[in-house]
Length: 212
Image (cartoon, rainbow, N blue to C red):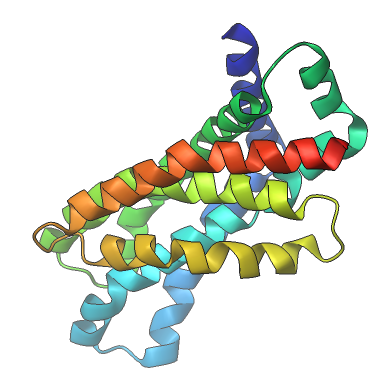
């Protein structure tokens, strides 16, 4: 357990020290700043589409560090060392998933309050968005780890990551943007939990195949 906690903490340190956290937050806020310029200053329209803009920004922010989550450790032999120490690949992937979430999600949720002001969202709409992000971002982190495992070592991994991750993220976006509707938050939580439970095994299998 201590080894897995160390792996998770290592991922958090890498996100913070490499500037990944700042990049994710800045990218998220840039989406919120530029979107009103694209559709105009209509406050009612911005309020209607604001939650979708925030969730799209969160998805892209979770996708940004995908290339550094598994591929560098696979190339440097770190994953081989974990396997030699008897650590299951799925458990390593789960620890990386936890570190990935802590590396971007809390700061993203905090930045959402700034994004909501930029998008002129009413105060009553902010709480469902924050709650939805808290529930749904673990699913985004899980998708990020699974995608990172599947594209590790491939040419153009960044482009492939988007193609792999985005279709599976659609339910999170749908349920997240409608979190203020009856039952939507429960469906969001169920799908996010399904991803958190299943994606480490997908990533672990990909890591094993990469070693063979």
